[in-house]
Length: 415
Ligand code: SF4
Image 1 (cartoon, protein in one colour):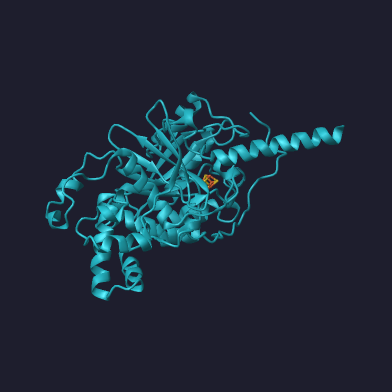
Image 2: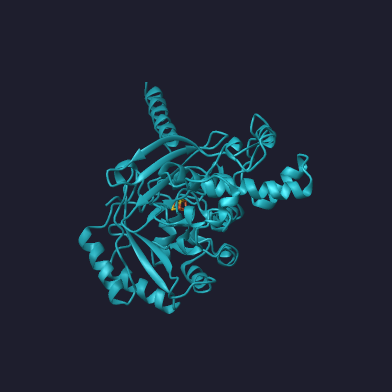
């Protein structure tokens, strides 16, 4: 076990989420991905269509974007041939650029993506027997510096836009071949079953990739609205989970305005330990957090709140911790399940994973307390896609470079 007592606790306690300006496209065209239908209509009207035309065209284009996965206006066969070049000149339907796609030997897939202005972030797809879950990023980097998390060692570069967030889902559908084939005509739409029939691989979304989604509230909300929109990607809110490290003031809004399932990165049951592992705890403590969970709109026994708990050897994994966890969840009468996550190590991490026996014993105590506490099987470890391991290659490289430079500087001083 690494001795961490003398190390300073990293991270800003009260981060200020400042979104950087997004560099406009060089060609001056506007990316329609991530915009609600009404905003597309406004853009079309601003570009010269009359109001009725703008509304109709926006409906058609929206359909092609989200139901068919089309990125080329020329493929939109119910739009007049003469209209398509007009659209192409002014607009674009983007995707995040894929820098690298990796396949784990357990089937997990990880993509390193790049925004149009050159920032890299990651998304992960985790296939299971009965579901396929896409782990989506909300920010490039993160301000929160949770100590067990590799992403937390990246600086925050900027918030992702709604288009870049929903773009991850679109890209996953592209990669998994999940867009409907068949007739490309609006008139055929009565036969919805043709392309909403299930059997899809991508069934669930978790906002658990890079970043704290509640520090990018508006963009995450905009993206998830498109994912849930019946005319958009039409995924049920019950299949979407947003994971927060505990941004208490935004939790109620999340339940009311987005309405998805909530997961909370709890990871410790005492102030001292949670202050260390999840530094935002210094701002919003455990009691305040659990009260916000108890008040979370829509939470019920059918829609339980998931508490994520990373298992760190000799840090948060004792029998006493497990009993305290049960006590706290009961005190706040929380419809809860606990996900026990074996710690996924990364270079430079100050923690070790608890032993399998310890994890089992912890899990048993929580189960005996009447709360489900399965141990999450680590996925995608071989490609650094597992929980808390996300960090872009560029950032890893630059840090390695920095380390080299620091070593050279020290060597230079010594000479
Ligand atoms: S666990 Fe989430 S909130 Fe905490 S540092 Fe990592 S990405 Fe940020």
